[in-house]
Image (cartoon, rainbow, N blue to C red; front, side, top):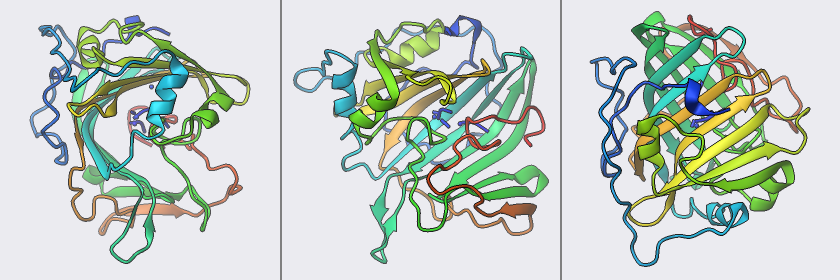
Length: 327
């Protein structure tokens, strides 16, 4: 998430030894919605944090077991069944390989699954990400940078400066999945076909703690699973590597917790989701991509082939986020 989830969380993301993401609160029960923007007080700056032993995950009946990556991908095909929405606090960390610079942003994520509207029309998958704090090096400052994707248009805005940029990423009449690996800005394979993913990537099931050196991240993914994806055609794929972490909620549903991507330039992006809440109410207007009233900005209509939506549009969550100023 210029994110995010993960290109977060894609697009919702090399080992993590050189990364020390901004400390966050340890995982809590998933009963608290994350619909509201972060509190006005700034998040803690990078430093030492007391490590709390991970809580035992709820295991109603027999615990989930996966023999290999294919088995996990099969389960993920239906992980969004019956899910209307997902809300979470989100932390996005990006390390720029060439410059050695690093940016960390913190905010909230709201995701709407595909549904049918009150008028009977189909509603595509959509999301809103609101970052309100950014840390670059030792400097921590309040800086609002919001993203909304409604299935066709991506709206990026800077509320403090009353500016926006609205881009049509998908041709009129076409459909686009923002969670699709290799295409969407939040590469989190929930509700995607296993065969589609395996046709493009080699998948490996790893121990959840493998490659995770930050103590709070280890706690977050404990009792979960890690999926490692390597593109079969490295020359045509934006990623060198994608790692995704899942952990079940109290009801046994697989939910995304963390994602890490390494792009061809060497930049490493990590998306961490905490306080994940299913079926949280999405306030009216949160997923609206209309130009904000009173803002100055520009609108770019679709200019690319409908067969290849641009998932790596500069400024799109997780694609190639701007450094510093946000443009």
